[in-house]
Length: 338
Image (cartoon, rainbow, N blue to C red; front, top):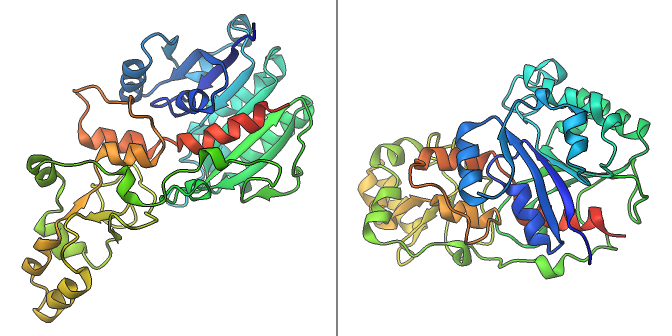
């Protein structure tokens, strides 16, 4: 009988890596999941009540206790704030890198881990932290491949380019360590994972109360309508949803024109010609994507849900800090391919 692949899931968040392993179709088991974020841990435990999930500082993990679990694979999404374009870019000098540096220090002592899958933001690939990590991988006989991939590569109508690294003790049959891949290699066919291309397939059928709760306020429209990224259900793309979605209007994610019987061009012209009277925009029913719709675009399965106590603000924040499940599922299969 084929044994389960044993996964150590660090910086586990709301379980994106766990769902990716499940979505891959490979027989896998998360033997330990670790995160210090209380809200994320609540969501993780709600969806994976049987998983060994710990609220721990990763710096407190020792090679001895990890080796006792005999993990085959390390999957992780270390903090991205030291490398984001809107952050201070302190890189390894950011205190939030300390846990990652701890993992680098003990990687040589992790006796059973032969495969690693890591996710981070665009910008990590030029960081000092990346160079330190790569050096440690090479010193411990790992081969690696790096990627910058978006869900659009699977025809998912959402832009969310992220850095990914695959590392293993065996050689890879594609690419080289000198080139960061911007698409899946020709030898890999993710066709079976390709998704619906229009937003319509990812949307909920909202009742009047739910719709009202997600409509943009007239104050938001009057201040920010000119910078909003407005999409329709027939659109084949949308902007990346960040943890500040609904809190800030610009650059945090697309909004949806709920009423498709109106022409946004005509109504916007009326708005401008009227001296910017927002009454001309009401009929469009511009609304935020719901947390469930964002989760759909990020590849979370239909059985994923939040505890009833989780607020919408927290849902958006947690989703904004997560990853695209379908993209990682394809990478996981590539990592484990013989």
